[in-house]
Length: 420
Ligand code: FE2
Image 1 (cartoon, rainbow, N blue to C red):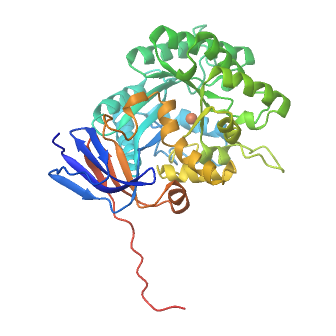
Image 2 (tube, rainbow, N blue to C red; image 1 turned 90 degrees about the horizontal axis):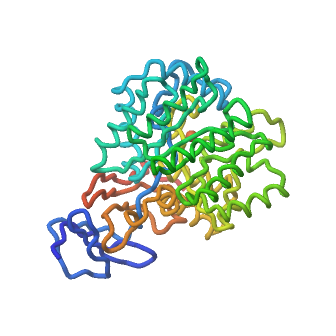
């Protein structure tokens, strides 16, 4: 073995270990490795973690906040209206420039796996074309999955009797999208919503793709497409290839229905994605008081053994004008909103942005820190997961494909006068 990079004195799973990398692969992990490498870095006991996984983001709209106007009501639906105007001026270069800027922002803070939805209800598929190019351009340092997402619905804009968006989503899949998306609660009727879910599964089976549906992202306790997604996952056997994003209505269902549904969900084995930063601001807008939190039942899904992961959803766009691309912000918000403040619960929230996210993205053996795995890992100026959530420290090193991609120094605080 001839390592090209050795990381010494890493804290990994509460042990002090050296990690040797050859090319783009981890070749040894042990205390005090005897081997040497042309590049060696003393990690000084900092926490080494698998990279963050951003399970749900919209890169095509990222960094467009205020264009052409700000979302004054703060609602999902005003966001959709603003985006409908903004996307009239989209160009491939516009999408590529902003997507790469957002990916660099994320990678610099430890995210190396990203699932992005892309709006395919725009006739020229400009955003898709841009993101497909980006996926190829960045593959040497970050993994990008693309979901063909019909933002305006599959059947909600029939044109001369032709279901135009139905054709566009299939074209997007043929062009190379990794997953089929949808938004059943935004279709014109309950029946169209159900029909859209069946169509999504039909396309996924036909083209052998993953599924990630914006599902019940509304406070309406009668929005019940999750049961349809769950049933289809069970009937088709696609199960772990299926993800229900948001499912915020689940937070409003009555407990009798929620209990019955949870049983179905456990049988279906689908994945869930919560986006706590944005859903705490988007949902509950029509409530007076008590005001709902607008989150799915994250803790209960986790307790039931279902796979839950986390995402930003948006970074500085018509739906959410904030966002830094730092997954520790997302984890911290999840801990607070889901009341997962027990030590084991906080560790679970961290896992939702790492290993659970990898499971949602179906990354399988290409993710994790072990001998034989691709050498993707991050170093946090921290002692453990709890400490990382509490202090939201600097990610000091990002190692991608066996090479140092980013180094960031922790801020230094210098008092300029004596104080008691
Ligand atoms: Fe979304």
